[in-house]
Amino acid sequence: MIGAALLNGIIAASIEKMIKSGFNPPIFLSGNRPDADEYNQSLIHQYQQRIPLLR
Image (cartoon, rainbow, N blue to C red; front, side, top):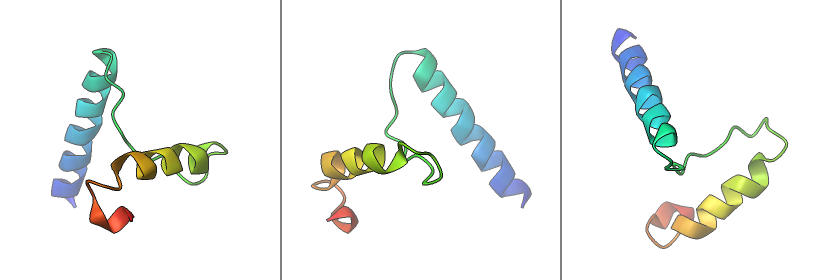
């Protein structure tokens, strides 16, 4: 459990640094958000050639 918490913290800090530097990381949004389906579908379309499981 501690390892998972540390890993999540590292990932969150990395994402924050990317955003602060002007890079928009391709992260799927929670399905609970009203705009998530459209945004997530755009990521699937963008990366489906590189990630076979998205096809």
